Every structure is written in structure tokens, then in C-alpha cells.
Image 1 (tube, rainbow, N blue to C red):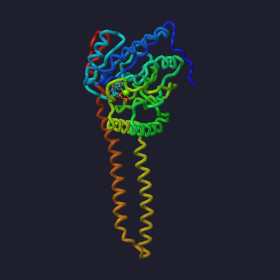
Image 2 (cartoon, rainbow, N blue to C red):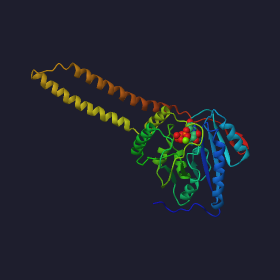
Image 3 (cartoon, rainbow, N blue to C red):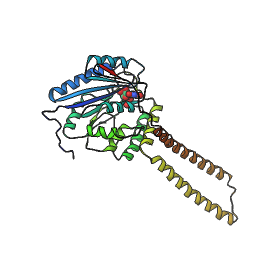
Length: 327
Ligand code: UDP
Ligand code: MG
């Protein structure tokens, strides 16, 4: 049960930071910023809240960065953070979280797929006491059959490992300062935002939304990247694949033991079968399994290697806050 801490106080105004990861969104970003201005203005009329909007340019190769720069010059509501290259959405969201000064943050996509009018409902839930407000997808728009199957398999594995239902989970979320600080304190490099938020706990509430079709521009996730993303996050979050390997190894060994017993009995009773095919089949199965198991172990090893290197998750080229550039 959510405790009813009211966060709005007559003397102190709350501040909410909106974080928008941007990668090659030149076709939509100006319109989206206009939409955010509109939505935040409407909220401020009824609700005493300051807004800060962080536009994180994730190394776009189109002119998104120039548009963002213009936006931040014209309107102090917006701040631009510019990466030195494309580091991926996870890095962009983290940069936003690390630079946010709000009492709460809301992460929202730049392509209109996350309806900005829900921001108001999210803030209401936060003011009623929720630490996390999850926007949950009712249905996925513009998804192929293969992507839908993959997404549901992925969500299932992640639900098992976080202990929270991840079906329909999205990155469109509000996080209270306490949650932000908990997430910032995690030192891991291979990060899965949705999973981390589920993992830290706190009081969570949900709102349901229909994913809108992307307004313009291209989806940045080809199938290969999605597969990579899924594998990365599974490995980042759970050692389940290693345990499964152990289990399969155990079952194979048990089967092998049975087969060995049967072969011995036949041998000593003078009925040894020639069994060349069986030998080949067993060799191939065990050989194949061993290679898969080594592959899975290597995946984890490569993640450990990356963590140990301790490189930064992103590199900023420039941060523009009001009228002063900083590097
Ligand atoms: N994005 C990003 N870096 C990337 C890819 C995407 O910052 O490397 C941003 C993108 O600009 C958008 C959001 O992340 O605001 C979601 O990306 P997209 O629409 O391509 O993916 P979806 O999750 O909608 O399939
Ligand atoms: Mg999108």
C-alpha cells in the first residue's frame, strides 16, 4: 500500500526533470519539444512544479544536435547533453539521471511513442506517494511477429529474474529522488534500466498506455541490435543461463550413465551391439552441448572483462546549461 506522503508543500516547489534520449530524431525533436513545453505549461498552471528538460543527444549523425542546441538557446527550460559518439539509449538515460536536479525524473522517448499527456498523471501518482510510476504498454505498435515473440520471451526471462512482471514494461517511467539515488549508486557498467528500477523496489504504481506509432524517422533497433540487447540484458541481470547449462549437463550425464550401464550389460551378456551410429550421435550431442556451454560461459566472461576495464558508460562532448557551455 502506497503511503500518502504529500510532496507538494506551500513553501517549497517540487522540481521534475524530464529526460529525453535522442538519436537521429531531427524529423521529430522540435515538434516533440513543443509538445513537452505545452504539456508542462498546462501542468504548472494547476500544480506548483518547476520543470527541467534534459535532451541527451546520443551522438546523432543527423542535425538533431543542432536543433537541440537552438532549443536550449531559445528556452531555458531545455538543457542539452551531447555525447562524443553513439553510446546507446541505456547510456543516454543514465546521463540524464546523473545530471538531473529534480525531485523526480521522467524518462520519455523523443518519437511520440510515449504519450506526453500522461506526464500529468504520473506526477499526480508521485505526489500521492509512489516512488516509481511505471507506464505499462497495453499493446505494441509497429512490431513484427518475430519482434513480438522475442519481446515476450525476453520479458518472461526478465520477470523471472527481477521477480516483477515485466510484460509490457517500458522505459517511460517516473522515478522519485530516492530511487534515482539508489540507481546512481549502482556501479555496474552493463546496465538495464527497466530491470534496475524493478530490482530496487520502493512503492510502485502503474498507468497503462497504448504505444503510439513512431511519428517520423526510423526505428533505431534493427533485429540484430534487439537480439544483442536481449542477450546483453539477460547476461547483465541473471545467471540463469549458467544454471541451465549445469542442469542440461546433469541430465546428459544421467542419460549417459544409463546408456553406459545398458552397454555394459549387453557386452557382458555377449549381445554387444555394433552401435557406430549411436557413438557418432552421442559424440555430436555432447560435443555440441559442450561448445554451447563454453559459449555461454564466454558471454559472462566477456561481461566480467568489460566491467573490470571500468571504462565510462558514456563520454560527453558538451553540456549546455542555460547560456554557459561546459565540457
Ligand atoms: N535512442 C537513443 N540511442 C540509441 C537508440 C535510440 O538515445 O542508440 C533513443 C531514440 O532517439 C528514442 C528512444 O531512444 O528517443 C527509443 O528509440 P526507438 O524509437 O528507436 O526504439 P523503440 O524502443 O521505440 O523501439
Ligand atoms: Mg520508438
